[in-house]
Image (tube, rainbow, N blue to C red; front, side, top):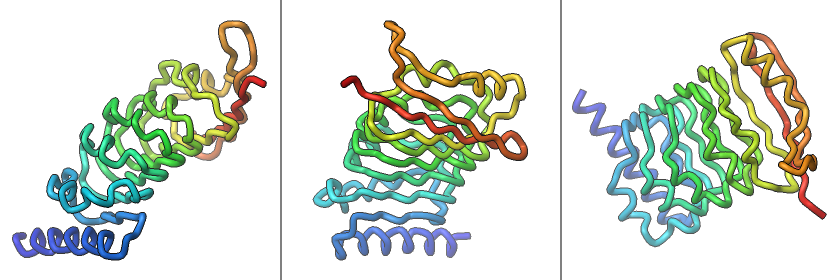
Length: 201
C-alpha cells in the first residue's frame, strides 16, 4: 500500500515538473489516485498558472474541488473531471470566464450545475453517467453568446426527460427569443441538446 502511494506521489510530482519545465499549457493528472487536489501544486505552479489552459483530473477519487482551485486556474479553456466522485462545484467556478468545455461525466451529480450557465465562453458540458434528477431552471440563466452550448447528460426519470424535451426555445421577460434548443435522445435516456444562443443586434 505504501509503495503504491509513493508511486502515485512520484507520478504527480513528475507530471507537475514536466508542465513547468516544458512551459506547456496542459496539466495532466489523470489516474493519479488523487482524493483532493494537492495543495503543494499551487506553489510549484505559481509562476505559470496563467498559461495553463487545460487541466485533466480524470479517473481519480475526487469528492470536491476547492474555491482556490477555481480562482487559481481562472485562465482555463478546458477542464476534464470525468470518473471521480464529484456531486457539486464551488460557486467560484464562475471565475472561469474563458472556459469552453468541461467534462463531468461519470461522477455523482444529482442536480444540474447551474453555475456553469453563467460562463460566457462555455460551449460544451458533459454530464454523461450521472444521476441528474432535477433541473431547477438552469437554462433561464444562460449567458448570451454567439456560440452554441452542447450539453450531454443522462436523465434517470422519464417524467423529467419529457419535461426537458418540451423546451424548444428560451425567451427573456420581454418575449424575445434568446435561444433555440434541439434534442437527441438515445438508449437508456442518454440525451444531448444543442442550445443555439443569440445576441441582441
